[in-house]
View 1: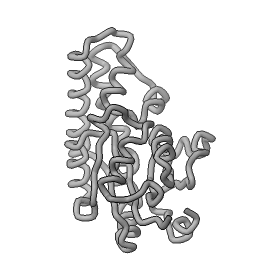
View 2: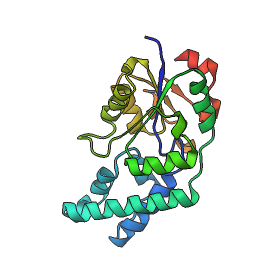
View 3: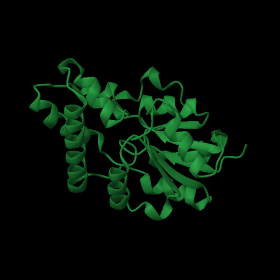
View 4: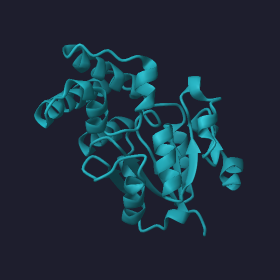
Length: 218
């Protein structure tokens, strides 16, 4: 089946927001006396905020109200930090132009809430190029479940077999492959050589490096 659809993750792929998520979580978790290492954060990259908060505060036996309060504060801080110092990652406009010139349908499938997606797409000036945006925020299952990717393909009126997806997290990669879509990963530099990316169809060091040869390999 011919590829005619491309779907992007957002955080850590299009915008350098993962460090900002970590900063926000550190501020909120610090209130409870919880401290995470960079390695801790890496294990939960790609999860929804509610899942991230529930996992790392599980030992505190908080009720849902307190967990929701912590999650909402993290989202407020992330939005504020992205507006103030969010940076476009290398190759974003190159990759968007590459697929736009080939008349691909273009979407975003993210674990972040739609309010944050709006902030990011405005900052990156991507809105004119996007045909669908889906969030796992209120889905029964988030990544690594494929639901958010399948929803995006459905909104784009595409078969999963027509889709190429770009991800930067292991949870996202698993979601893409479970959806039966082609997966290109752009891992954070320190994890580039890890064996955990073996499920991906292609691995790049930057979106800027994607070209016609890579496309033909898919």
